[in-house]
Length: 121
Image (tube, rainbow, N blue to C red; front, side):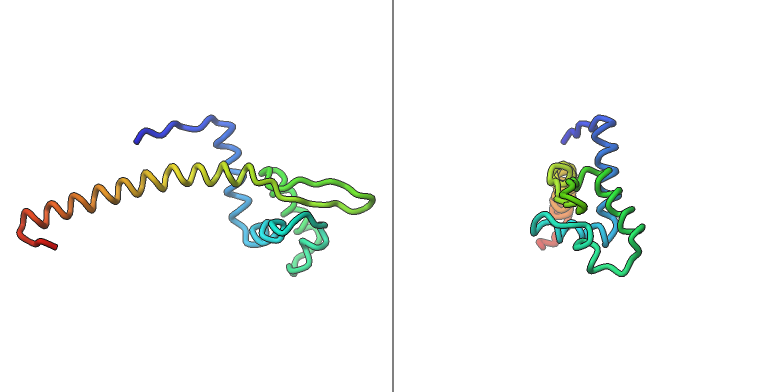
């Protein structure tokens, strides 16, 4: 299997997505957003962290393109953007297929070796 190397911009975007997803608070926020658009204060409720920390999490998610923000009056409304997650899923899928093919090839090789040694396992 030949894998095309993604363009630098795509690699950079994937790096931002995986970095954003590496934090449990940010993953939790994305899980909350799966239920629909909400306010920053609602996203922050379950977490015992400072407002500056919440703001930093929001910036990381925005930089990765995982969320978008609109302002309604004084309230910022946040919603999830699925395109970066789909891109990451596609990248993982390519390598999952490659790894599966490699493991299947090793398994087949071991079966042949066992048969040759008379271990019909």
